[in-house]
Length: 158
Image (cartoon, rainbow, N blue to C red; front, side):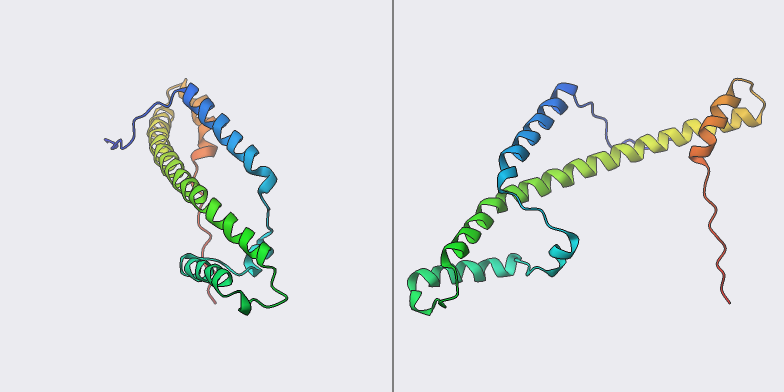
C-alpha cells in the first residue's frame, strides 16, 4: 500500500531557534502594551470588525472636523488613542494570523503523514506478532495500547 507524501521538508534547528528567539522578542516588546481578556470579557465586548472599522475611522474624522457634536462625557483623547492602537496592531494581527495558519497547516500535514506511517509500521508489527515472531511481542504490547481503537458506545435509544 502506497501512501502519498505531500510534504517533505527538514527545517534546520538553527532556523527554529532563530524564529523562536524573534517571536519571543516580539512578544516581549509588545508585552507592556498588551491586555488579556477572559472568555466572558471577550464575549461581552462590542466587536470592531471589517464593517465597523470604516465607521470608527469616519467618526474620528468627524470629531476633528465637527467637534461641536462631541458629547461632554466623551473622552476624545482616549478615543483617538484607541483608534491609533487598532490601526497599529491590525497589520501585526494579520501577519500573526497568516503565520499561525501556515504553521498549523504544515504541522497538521506533517503530523498526518507521520501518523499514517506509524500505522503502517504498527500493522506490520501486529502481523508479525500474530504469526508468532518472538521479537515482535514486546513492540506489539507497547504499541497496542496507543493504536487500539476505542469502541463506540452503542446508542441507548428508548
